[in-house]
Image 1 (cartoon, rainbow, N blue to C red):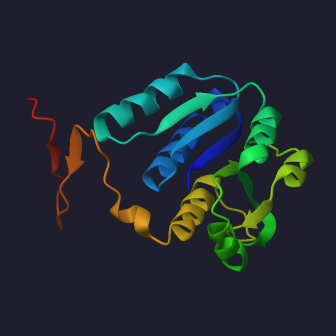
Image 2: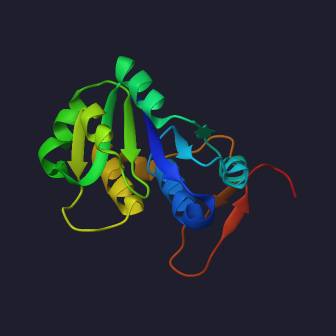
Length: 178
């Protein structure tokens, strides 16, 4: 199952850190890539490209002028999950979503999610019905979707690798370079 994320309404001056963190969480928790709408941000795209170059994997980032087109295109061949605190509880629908075997587009909002998104989604899913960040909602959703297997992910083509240890920080260059 391919899982991609659609970030709605990116505003570089206001959302730079949140969108970056959202995309990093998507990558770390098993998504194949992200497409974002709103205002194009070449610095964001370069930052994510640099992370993939350094830390490996085949994650990609793209921009779309039209989130509607993205949702409609995806809905023609895959399924759409919209993360919202107003949806059905994750624990009640995650088995159904996991069992659908279709590729998934996970939609996460920005400033204000248009009502049309709720209608275009196959599932409107609440990680909790309390206010929280889209970054945490995405991480929890992907963790549940992949049943924790994403935590053991191996990222091919990495230049850097963290060496786990109880204290301190150790990062190795595994590319054979200096």
